[in-house]
Length: 460
Image (cartoon, rainbow, N blue to C red; front, side, top):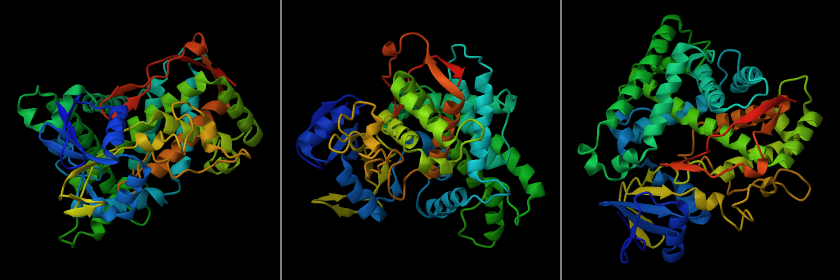
C-alpha cells in the first residue's frame, strides 16, 4: 500500500500501489503542490504543477541535479551510462553526449539527413502494404531504432535484417518488463526483490546482449578510427577516450560507452515509436485535422521533394499537431525521478539529501488554464488567432532543466519529419467507422501507450 501525508508530516492516507495522475491531482488539491508519498517505507516527494516544477528544476536546478534511484536499472546498469548515472560520471558524459548529438558534424551527414533517409525507407515499406489494413507497430518501431543505429554505428539496417530484428526484440521485451506490475513492485518496494521471480535476470540478460552487440561495433570502429573525421557517436566517444587517456579522473571508458549507447537505444526507440503510433491514431480519429495537414503539405512542400526541418517554420499547422500529440498523449506522466544533491530548504520545508523527487509532467501538460479543455485533442492549443504557431512554457514532454531528455533535439526532428513524410505520401484510412476509434491509452507502468489498431496507408 501507499501512504500519503501532507508534505513531510501529519495526515496519512492509503493509495493503490500505482497511483494515477488524477489521484495525485486530488492529493495536490488537498495538500498543495508539494507533498510526500510513502511507497512501503520509501518516501517520495511529489512536485505538482508548473510553478513548483519551474522553481525546483530551473530556479534551483543545481539542488535537484541528482538522478533518483530506479532499483531495476540500478541493479542492472550499476550507475553506468548517462540516463541513470550520477555525480562526476554523469557530469562528464552528459556534457559530452548532448553536445555531440546537437553539433553532430559527423562525417558528411547531419542527424536531419539520417532521419530523412530513414523516413523515405519507412515510406517505401508502408507502400508495400498496398493500402491493406495494417498494424503500424512494427514499421514505426523500426524507423526510430534505425535512426539510433545510424547515429551510433554510422549505418542503418534493412527491416528484415536478423541482427536488427534481434536488437528490436531485446528492446521491446525490456520495455514490456520495465512497465510490468512486477517491475513496479521491484522499483517501489525493493526490499521485496529477493522474493520476486527472476524476471530481472531476463531484463539483465537482454541489456548485456544489447551491450555485446554494441561492443562488436565498437571493436570494428577501433580498427579504422580516424579522429579527424568521426563518422558517428562511437567514433566521437573513442576520440574522446584517446584525448582523456592520461586523465585518471576520466569517466570515458568502454564500459560507459556501451552503457551510454544502450541508454540511447532504450530512451530513443520506444518513446518515439509510441508517439508516432499514437499520433497516427489521433489523426485517423480526426479527419478534419488530416485534411488541414494535407492542404499545408501540398502548399509548402508538394510531392516532388523530401521534407526538411526548415519546412517547419512554414508549416505552423503540422508543427502544432506534433506538439498537441505530445501534450495529449502524456507519454511519461510521472517523469523520471530526480533527487536532491544535499539537504536543502525548499519553500517552507527541508528536503534531506538523496530524497527522491517525482516532478510530474501530467499536471503541466493538462493544465486547464494554459490548455482549455485539456482532455480534448485540439491543435488550437498551440495556434494563435492568426493561425501562427504559439509557444507554451507548459509544453514539457521532455521535462525541463539539466535532467531534461538528452535526445530532445533529435526526437523533435524525427517526429516532424516522420509525420510529414507519411502524410505527404499517404491518406490514412480507418478500418471501420472513425467514430468508433478508441484512443484511450494503455497505461503500463510509467508509460502511456496507444491501443493496438489497424489502418490503411492509401497513396496520396
